[in-house]
View 1 (cartoon, rainbow, N blue to C red):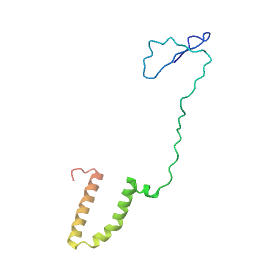
View 2 (view 1 turned 120 degrees about the horizontal axis):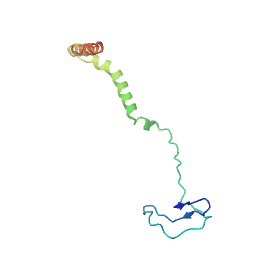
View 3 (view 1 turned 45 degrees about the horizontal axis):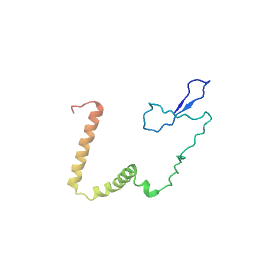
View 4 (view 1 turned 120 degrees about the vertical axis):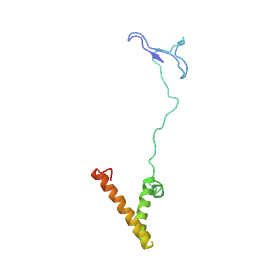
Amino acid sequence: MVEVVSPDRTPLVYPYIPGTPLLPKPNVTYAHPFAVLAKRRNNYFVPAESFNVLGMFKSPMMLLMLGSGIMMFAMPWLMSNMDPEAVEDAKKMQAKIFGAQAAIQNGDLAG
């Protein structure tokens, strides 16, 4: 801890260990032209990561994109393999959902 009382007087330097209370101050002082040496040098450099194609496919956004792309190409094949009654039921359900969405957009919440 360095205590500067006035510009005329020499600053007082007290040894301080982090985690200990500052009071009472020790009676040890150091001479004015003092040298402070570092205990260690911190290295804050973080090297940039290299590009990894397999790591890119672990991303949740990439997984969602791949899943939707696969479903986009798989749905016509699934619909062609369904029986005609199931296709008609799916079309009726889809029309019902689109009608409800259109009613909400028009402000008809009761419909």
